[in-house]
Amino acid sequence: AMAADACVVQLRADRGPHKLYIQETLLDPLCARGVLDLDYGEREFGKDADYAQQIMNTDDPVPFTNLPCAKCAVLDITSCRPTELFGHDWPLVYYAGCSGSNGKGKGGGRNNRAVVLGFVEDDKKLGRGVVVQ
Image 1 (spheres, rainbow, N blue to C red):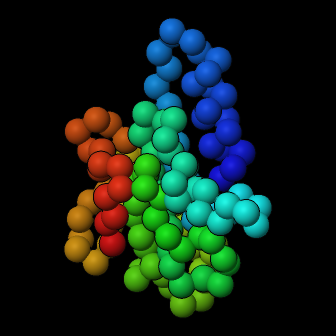
Image 2: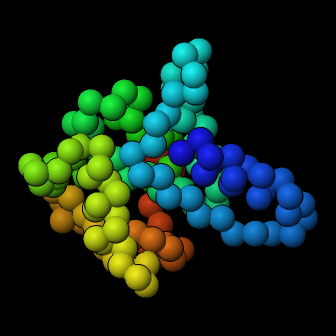
């Protein structure tokens, strides 16, 4: 996630006055930046993207991956993880299965609310900080 977010920051800086639309998708990102800034990603990830989405689960043992990023629309898929999958792999498997080759796949959670994954059109975007389960 650090590399992806740094790429977004650099793309934004390099384009100058030329507008470049950037969408960032983070799959269960590690949010710690060393030992001195443990909640860096929760505060910063997604801030330079036009639209940022985070797909997360909260039941894996990987530290600093279990809280939503404030600058992202968040899909918490914890409740629908198959028991045979290790928790930290689940967001990648979920995203790959839902987004498909055309990026028009839909995910969702307990509320059966459709959430568009992949490239998200304006009328389907969730707000920053919104968490859907």
